[in-house]
Image (cartoon, rainbow, N blue to C red; front, side, top):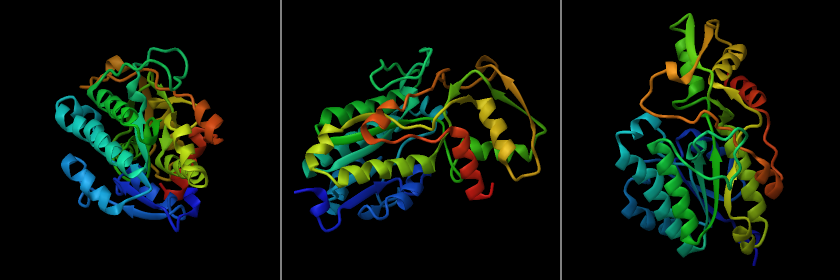
Length: 300
């Protein structure tokens, strides 16, 4: 029996009010019956309760968009980061295995150390530099070891019109300062949360049209980012170039060493999307085009 033979597959979504989760509520419509949980409905820090809540819904697909994303705070809140980014995905993967459900999970470029000269592929050696990266890598490894069918999408530099992110921070600071010093030697692909949600839906639509065996054949880690790359300073300049706000501060590019932070971040965060294109036929849009679309759509 194929999944499409079922009346209407149930898709359980966690983190429904977050940056990616909010967009997934929209993009997953039409693929099945979406049961969306925010933190109040399903607090993933309570790992003992995860199995019970998910089992009651009995979904065909679990999409985990909840995460501990406060990178700097994770350096001192190691237990909190590990609970949400490693222990919760492990609990979700166990119940997915038991239910025969497909698990979709999101990870990060920060599983790499950034020393490779080119774009990272999925099989490159991981070596996270910070607690956040360690916790996300542990989540990936727990899911892979569980035996469930899964898609782990590593993404980078996520932004959107809601939540706490670089785009919204730059627009806020523009109203306060005439000049902004922004790091110019960290390179990556700014990736719109709307793009992540839409491309997740494309991949899921393919799997939901096929045999369940195909879930395992295509299980694995995939890089899902916008195409191309820039620095944080280049990202900031593009934000102001596209902004409707009258305040447009001057961007001063500075090296990472001149920007003290509690967290060590990789200098090279470029991820290759080749596997995503080969397996699912998904070709991400350039980062600057996606940024223009996001800002125009949100009237920022």
